[in-house]
Image (cartoon, rainbow, N blue to C red; front, side):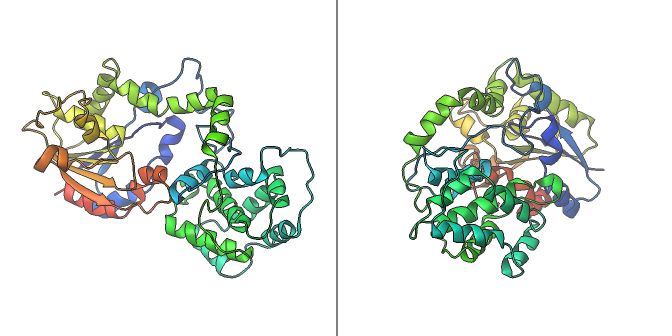
Amino acid sequence: MTSVVFVHGIGVRDHEYPQALPGLRERLEEVVPQAELRFSFWGGDLGARLPDDADPAEADRPAGSSPWEPAAPDGDRAGADTDALWALLDEDPLFELRLAAGREAQPNRAPHLLPLGRTLKARARELPGDGRLAELLTDAGLAAVFPGAVSAVLGTWVTREALSRATPGTDMPGALARALVAAALASVGPADGVPALTRDTVDQLVAEVTQQLGGSDLGPGARLGRFVVAGLSPLATRRRDALTRGATRYAGDVARYLNPRCGPQIRARIRAEIEAAPPPVVLLGHSLGGVASVDLLAAPDAPAVHALVTVGSQAPYLYRIDALPSLERGKPLPWAFPRWINVHDERDLLSFPAADVFGDRVEDRVVDNGMRSVDLAHRGYFANPQLTSVLQEAFR
């Protein structure tokens, strides 16, 4: 019998944990079908939480909404790239349309649609049709939810206001297409059996929707203009409490782990799971879970594991700035430290290579999770078939 002990990263809470591992079981089935997958879950009681957060599920939040509780800013932005824009669309599918609607838009206004706005609305209602878009949606697992996403987007006052301002030469077809695709994506998740889609698949969907709306894809954020100062600053001021509570689950988890009172409790939980697992044990840590795993195995009384695999980990960065609790900067890994394979996606800004820090004591493996934003890249490792070969190495 062999075991894999998985340690999750930041922001994971009880109600999300069953959905935090898309693809991991599939990867293991390909490598060691007989392996026992065990979880070292620490986010429920050891994760960061403000004192009055009685319900970690935040039941008053709409289902499927972000823990950051974002509202779309209403200014402009210049030079937005694909990653940045999709990070915003993932949180609020109407983001671009809010920008187009303008600051003075009113929810109860009945705007008069110009010819282009009427045309876009009529064409959107005819989607997806029975051509290539229907095939792409079926392949992506979105065919069942797309008509509802179209109705939801077209039924908002934001969309009506944005369409009332649509004029030839603008990127309104592309903005509406991205809103429709983003709304469909927001309505499904791992629990629905729909994996996170690659950026190529999303790009194909957007391009096809844009074409059927009668536009050409000018690229994400082609005319977003200025929005950071004009839009996000007032937004952050108005929603400071909501943003702070959301950030607590992420930055707060890191702060708690680095607190000398809390970090040892998390590492003790990982140790207990390792010691209870049938050997040999491969320890698999994601994000902050990888940091805690490195820390635990660098301690003088480290538990025995066959190998360590970290994915999307910040351990090399924390070592560089002398913030890794169990290993002072400049000191080598202990001689008994197990084989360590560190996996990172170069698009994942929260992951770091380790070989340039720890030398030949660690083996870096670069993968491409194929995701459309840096946030999804950080969460996309276990849906990536490239991880299979890494796990095969770890079990040798």
